[in-house]
Length: 428
View 1 (tube, rainbow, N blue to C red):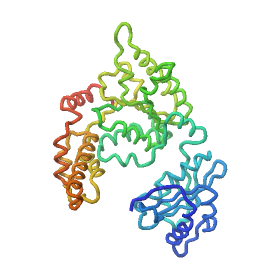
View 2: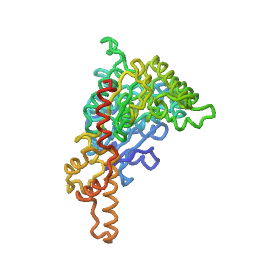
View 3: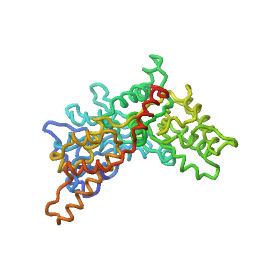
């Protein structure tokens, strides 16, 4: 059953009692009693997970803030849905609400017998302290950083982005080893003389998921993700270069951040011409900003480009970007994961997914999504024309026909150039 997370309502209190009875095993001695849990539901922060029918309560998480520390008062999920990471989603939702109170850590005391609850905590970044079963997690964004992050249009991405990127094992392993590991374990990296990265470029054909990978890195690190949009900054009366400088000054006030600039070639293309073009000043400003970013700890600047050959050569010199990493078209495993998102559960057993994976070689994720939507639309129109009596989801042939009508975003010439760029400009 699909679950929706929402704030608790007064009419949920009776369901909390039912959930308590359904999840408490004989002999269990919970840290907080039912009466205290119900009182906290009304006085503190509480979220619930309900079925897609909006009626059945599948789980709940209740917490309270005490100065700079937040405490989990109650976390429970029905046994039949414990394999859906519902406990983790509830903890994420509760953490976001408690973080607004200015807490710096989120803690819980969990009876050691409650293995399912313990797994939900450990899977969500909590550490267990010896036999006390005291779970603690440092809140990634605290206090004034929350307001600044909102002002910058940044956000904390939920866990799971990394796992949601199916396939692409080479790219994921490269990002994990080069970017994530040194930043996630800085003390160990220092012992081995590894300098944590400060800036990286992701390059590859359009639509290959470079933005998705940047978000996955932020999610993996559990750092705030701030995307800088030069097109939006261009409307600043002070000019694009000044707006870019001011934005990075604000980002510098965050405790940590993954900063992302997509299509960086738009503001950092080759400088040429006499007189200089207006964008040359922006390129110069970016070249000044990068060293400043590199001097700050707990910062990672990721720039993405579809056309790495058009970038100013000064940008790619050693000392500015630690790595220049290629992101190619989805491999077979990745295409299988993409298709699984667009084939509905009702027809999954009747659709030849392997045939679709083979037929979509050379397509970007966006191409595959477009084909899937065309197939769904065609099946829907056919059902309407038939009066709904023979309504059926898209068939394998519907998907294959849609694929035959797709013009690939990435042509063979672009793929050939990309392979050349890996050899001449890549730095892994």
